[in-house]
Length: 188
Image (cartoon, rainbow, N blue to C red; front, side):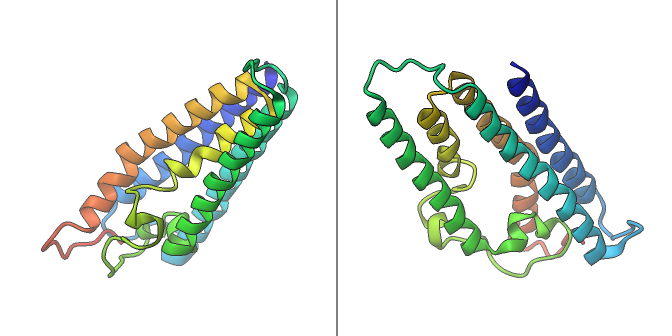
């Protein structure tokens, strides 16, 4: 269960670091950080990427070391096929969403620089309000099915709950403030 503890700590670090860093950034109306706009964003992006990659690696590790702990009562070819489909749909949705909003949005660039475009409603956003945190998480469930990992399946649900909580508490309020009709004040 060391792998599960490592993954849960990684997820907690990821959600808390990014949530706290962005909430602090949101509270400032003028960039007063010692690194200034672009350097501050690059520093945040490097740190966020570290937490994101560590989180993903810890999940893959968890599924690998806890493989064959999930008894579904169906032929393994069926669970592997269903899992592979979930991986493809989830990963494809994330890639499509990132291509639609751009690399900067993937790393929450709008917390650091004002944006002058409307809320994205094309690509997967034409069908889903938040494709990255909803359908985009199917690959975690899929990997847990492919590896038949019960702890992986539980971690996938916890991971998605954590990122949806982050979205509700940090990201969504920011987006709503940025796109408030008639509001010309932007956080910079």
